[in-house]
Image 1 (tube, rainbow, N blue to C red):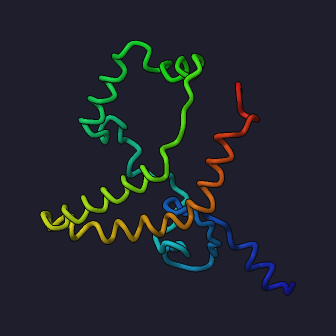
Image 2 (tube, rainbow, N blue to C red):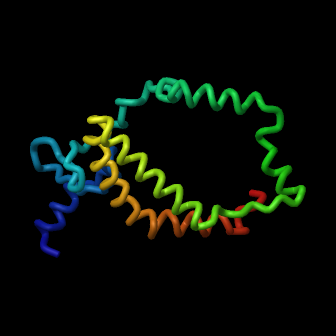
Image 3 (cartoon, rainbow, N blue to C red):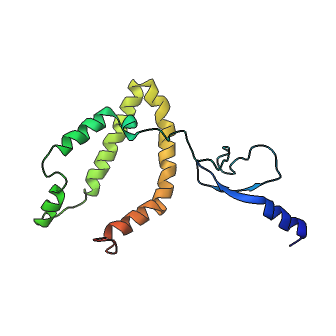
Length: 158
């Protein structure tokens, strides 16, 4: 390695993007604001402060909050499933035909919403594209891990 390359490496440091997590090499001698190579947002070593004061109760939808409170008032709701399973109840996944029917009904509903709502018609195609793109990742990474973790015996009782 040449001497000037070693000097350049010594003057650079690595900063992880606060938004997307990409690790970026930043050179000390460069003037201006460094940007992330992936998301192009400004890099900084300062902690992200935009949501630091945000309380989770501020962004939970009131209907969700009411539903959770109602569930918590039901005696034994936290242990109900465990009791059912301990009593011999067998849990089974929905049959494929039921899942297919539910999916078909969902898409019929989406078409109906698109006909009635300009907002839905504008929002849905972008959301569906995003979801379809995410399926590619989840099919490989998340689904594989979830299936492993659900049936792994290693974490039981820990």
